[in-house]
Image 1 (cartoon, rainbow, N blue to C red):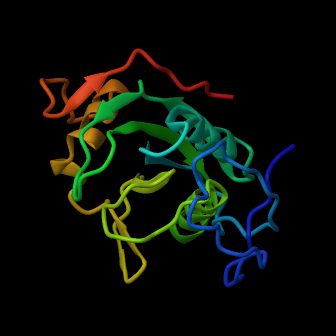
Image 2 (image 1 turned 30 degrees about the vertical axis):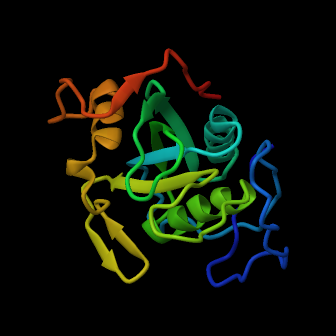
Length: 195
């Protein structure tokens, strides 16, 4: 069954914020209402960075892939190998990271709403910038488009400086990103299943 998306402007499903100890188990699933896709219906290749450093990190990453694949207007094309990386910011556990290539008919802001919904379903709690999280889903690239609004910047700021983004992009064969020795990046041998 395909997942339906929230309508632009929706305030969510009225669910209460998770308690302070929440977010350390397996991701939960909820269905949402649909949004309108891009007017011309053109498919755009987008690259999404995903990461987790709390709870069952691999389960959260797989939950993001599954959630994307179950969403109308999104086709998951490929997932990079899963890497382990040093955190950026305050002291916290190491991350598992990957990049997901998707083809989508959603607009950038509709795709952002999907990313934020997946984070909420994983009970992500935003307490501090660059703090630990159950799930982080960022739009790194959206075709050749540039977006600069208060709530969304594409390409993602500093993506070209982040080895935890560049290494998975290189694994996917993204043009212009060649494999090299990556700082703070460790292979895990783990993979994500693409539905």
